[in-house]
Structure formats: structure tokens, C-alpha cells
Image 1 (cartoon, helix red, strand yellow):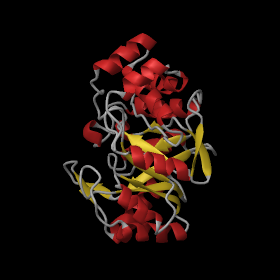
Image 2 (image 1 turned 90 degrees about the vertical axis):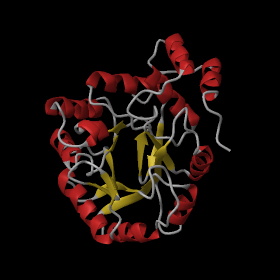
Image 3 (image 1 turned 45 degrees about the vertical axis):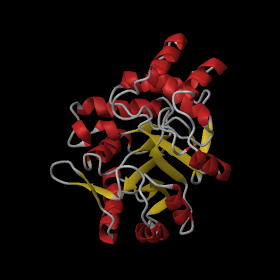
Image 4 (image 1 turned 135 degrees about the vertical axis):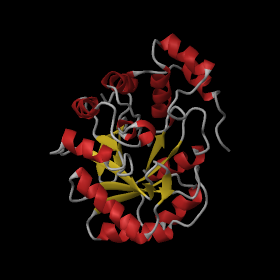
Length: 288
């Protein structure tokens, strides 16, 4: 499954660059149980059987639902499987996404992830910043210090950031090692170009979420033309472009369908020629 994707370090492990994001396994709007529990379990098992060794999740997906599905489908876990989770948010009874930055909230979130995943230690915990819908400035020190203490207690192996600005990444790295940054980035949203390059130079992973711009496919005639020429799907082409963009990008495309999972993983074998790359690069100019 590695194909053109290769591998990259994530903390003290090396993972295949094309992983799996479990967010879509919950119900509508990432809230409540899945429409088809058996299908959700099948997707997780199919991902690992296909060689995926990096799964992204959070206990606020559902909430609790997705982590419980992961445990049911995959425990006892393969030795090479890295599970990355997130804390810093919570859901109200209507499914709204709310900040959960207090020390007690963060500690409880770590405990919930451990319990629902059935693990004694979490491989990687990303602090999801909720200062704004997009990366918004604000100090990460109060929250990250809490997580760093839990790390010292042996509950967390590695820490990362999600929805972070470059300044917040720099602040965090002065507090403790940061093994990954997870932000919105894709063909049409290239604000993090400079950050990606800096992290690549440092050997730090960058994990783009919503690689096609959201829950609906990126609408681009240029992308569609390239996909048609390659006899591939727009999603496959967009994933292949991300794999080529920088060696430190770890992808976590999500799906609740085994067939769609296999399509996504096949992007690792898709080669983009110079003309295709030029066309895709022109969809959005690099950020300056």
C-alpha cells in the first residue's frame, strides 16, 4: 500500500504516509452512533488489513462512539498501529462543538480516550485549539502545560497541535516536543505552505485535514480534468498531490465505506506527470 507515499516519522515510530481518519464513522455531523455499525467496524478492519498503520480519532467524535468502535474492531491492537487522538473540545447535548481547555477538562479527556480506546497510554495527543473556527492567535501554554504533565506521568507518549498558527507552533515547541501539526490544507487552501516547509526541515509531521475542503468534494474543473485524464477520482488526485507536496505530510482521508477506503489507499500508487502537477498547482497560488 505504501507505493509512492513512502513513510515518515511520527514521534518514536515511522508510519506510512497514507493513513485513515475515523471521524466519519460517527453519525450525521459526527454526532451519535453510525447508521450502520457493522459497516463502520468493517472499514476499520479493512484499513488495517490493507496496511494502514496510522489512525486519527478523538473521543469527542460521537462523543465516545468512534473510539469505542475502534476498540471493538481492532483490539487487541497490532503492534505497529499508531492511534492519534485529540483533546480540547467537547460536545453539548445538541452536538455543538465547544472549547474544553480547563485543566480538569483536559485530564478527563485523556482519561476518556484511554478508557474508550482500551489503552494504558496514548500514542499521540493533539491539542485541538478552539480560539476560532480557523487558526486564531491565543496562548497555548496553559493547556499544553497540563498535557505535558500528563505526558510526564506516562499517560501520553507524544504531543501535537491541531488548528494552530505558526506562532502557536513556535510557542508550543518552547514548552515541549511537538511531533505533528494538524491543520486545514489542500489544493485550494495553501495558507500553511511556509509552515509545512519549516516543519519538513525539522523532521516534524504535518497532517492536513479535510483534504478536499470539507465533507463535499473540492469543486474544480482543473482537478476534474486531471482526474479524467488519469482515469482516477478527484479525491485520488488530490491525495496524490498532497503526497507529492512535501515528504512530511501524513494523510488521514476518512470514509465509512470499504470501497471508498480502497479508492483512497490506491492514491498511493497514482503518479502525477509534470503537466498534471502544473495544472493542480495553479488551482491556488502558494501562500506568501
